[in-house]
Image 1 (cartoon, rainbow over the protein chains, first blue to last red):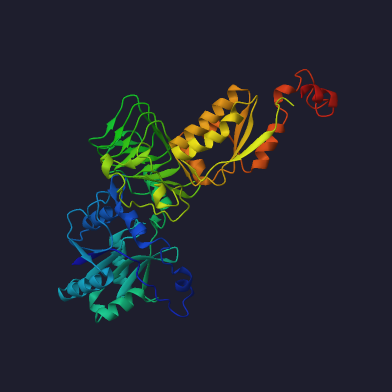
Image 2: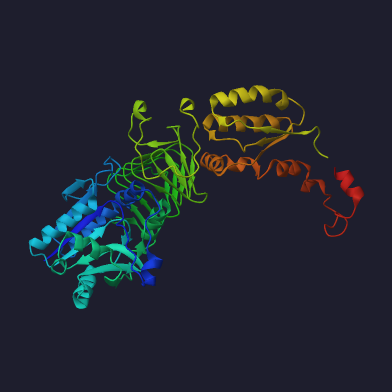
Length: 345
Length: 135
């Protein structure tokens, strides 16, 4: 029997093993603030979030017992994709809770536990990884991509004595190493999210839109409204209940996620419009990610807060509430074109 | 030269919103009413620009061109460039990295000033009289 624990929270602390140059060279902790990176795996990409896709992948591979442990600081709001129908344990310390669940599974006689901290999008054969784990006899097997560790472990509960031993085993440099040969996107930056969408639309990975193609290279979800005078150039994705107005142009691997509205005459080129975003009339949005009122231009590496709700805003918000926009995934760590003082807003 | 009068460099304010644009326009109006105004907007201090600010830029450009002059932008920050591109006005303006570059662009000899019957490799760059006639 195989069980899985999915963690939404901070990266595990790395213990670097002495004398192991691979471990020393490859240990990294995500540079982005926790909440920003965690949100990347929770937002929809081509109709479904990475978290949801991980859960579905586990189910498809016969893993029936799946627990989700989420960090309590992760805000739940309309922009986050729900975690399927899985029960979620919200906790102050996600890793402690996950270790406790591991011990519970051990007591219940589970043969192998898949422990996944969802921070990257990884494609590999779970069955092959389980077989590797069994053949090599390690208590803990960790997945690696190009010598860099991934946050995916396969654990033999019988090989670990207690919870302290479990934590040490997860971070030890000498655990079994399973080399992932499939597609890996570490989602360390919002630009990685854009790359994931492009790779999905270009068939460079298995991440595909949830609906079937409307035309070759164009996916339009149920409930989406595309004006007859709008132009969608393949490959492109239009999400559920999105509205594309007259004279719009959606082109160059752009994805418009669910409940978005692209208003009259706007061009979306090589960009991702995240769910619940309104893009105003007659604009030219290129090489960017738009999330509510925030705009990240990937060419220039700048993030802007757009104060004018007629240009960019969170969709579906009444005018009086627009000043209380959701945090979104785009932190304002870069230079921002906003007033320096509160009284100038 | 084809244009008259000095080239004026003006520093745009930090906040290019409705209020900032209105107060800036009060200083600028006399200049825009001159014959063939040649203006450079130094954008290095701009930290906030909205649709009112963009509208002001377009208005200034229109007024300058009505009087056979021109308006150029200098030292745009990446953020300002993104805003101008988003609102589809970036291509309307000539933009330069520095005010000096923008000023120099006013003094460049335009292509139409060079006689068409003169071989380009022969006399155009060596014939001072031709150049003086063109200017």
